Image (cartoon, rainbow, N blue to C red; front, side, top):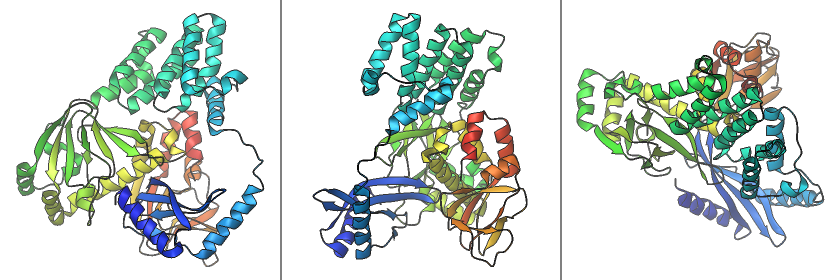
Length: 492
């Protein structure tokens, strides 16, 4: 469903219920574990300002929730009346709160920004900081150090800012802090597969630590892994998703697969367009770009030779649509396979169908991770390792215990559909102490630290749950920096 189709359908639904009293605001696409969901805010357009009634959700099947009634309008006005009495409350801006977080976590101590700079725009702040760096005296460098964390809130320029901060700390003689910033910048550049800037980080790291220590640094490892990913796929059959294709079926695909070359920056498909083909990357790099809740595009990962994309074309039964924009980041080549041909093979080859369905589910979870308030703070490499901890994704035919009380969890859970019922101890006949719904984690902290669960988690009938292996999660935590473990501990 396109944005225009959605707006027309939901506006018609509201008009039929409430006439012109309720209008639409803030149409956005959100990534859920179970797939993409449109969210539309319904408001009462009052002369004193919009009064929010509810956020309406429309899933991939076109099902709208919740159903509204006049009681919802009355409740919305009551809430608005109560909240308006608190209009004098003041809260710190989200931007400054984020800046303080970066100052405290990266610089080791909270720092205050002068009043005349606090209200400056990003462009003004960047120009001011550049001037301080150009002066080069110690006081100017320290003033720049105080200001630069504010620029980290811009995701498009965060990597470049971190690289500049590394150079600043090197000039101030803080080698350890400089190396930390270099490693953080390198992870950002590796996430978006900017090899030129990653090599620049590597050169700065080599100069900072010397030739003997450089091979042991994470910057060196990131560069090596990035270069290794560029090896072209020898044949179509080396793609993991097609490994189960039979000899006879290979003949069909050989005749149907067309090789297409993409120039750097060329768009292969756009999010929301009809999905008609499956793509296997032969060489180069393709970026996955998602529309954010605010409508702006955001690159969330890069895909490399062997990757399969466009699986919606063979897994969606009605009007399949591209769930992301795919853009070539460098000269690239893909095999284009008609959805009808691959769909026919899948109907005769259950193993191929299962592999492609699993790929689709992993892509959904990856999109969810990239937009998740907590998981989105982690770089792509850690998110990939988290995906690698998934043991299986199950849909339950009946209520099933997945985490028993009194035992160290063997798995942690992420609910895709349905819910987990949480019971105190083993009394499953009693009313659950709580329930958790889609897009929610359970048991990650207990699995990481081998803490016996105080609750029995029961996956209810027809629920779909991703189960993360506790042993793999612990291994991920043991080899990860403290800030990664802190993020994982907050899940759920």
